[in-house]
Image 1 (tube, rainbow, N blue to C red):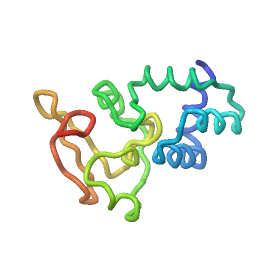
Image 2 (image 1 turned 135 degrees about the vertical axis):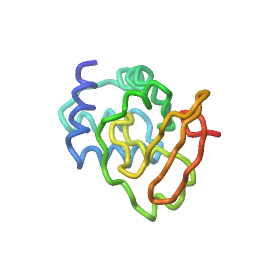
Image 3 (image 1 turned 30 degrees about the vertical axis):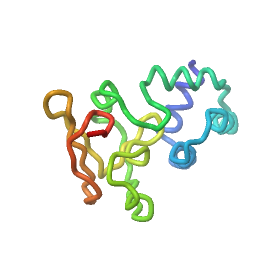
Image 4 (image 1 turned 90 degrees about the vertical axis):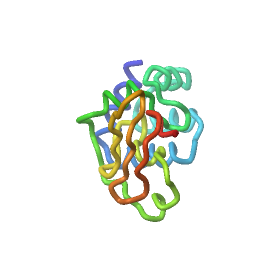
Length: 138
């Protein structure tokens, strides 16, 4: 599991690697593609370790977040992910808004806790502004 943690940390600090992971994640790539990319960067992880990391991070296959992730991401890394060709396709929170393992949220995305388990999801570029559950559903 240390290799998986090290891989995630490297991805947070390596823009090129994060871009590759984001491309894979946005396309719904299978775990073996992530494992192969990790190997290309010198990390030895298994599909099972990747899946376990996904479960323990509460990241669903679609890239949606659960409440613990929203609470822990405050103050985390962000990056400008705005791309009109991609972003204009979405009217709700998407993988592209939060990134691989929710490690790098788009600078333009925010999710603020409201009341009764609801969150306000906002894209400051005007793509969406709605109140829904922590994973972006109404």
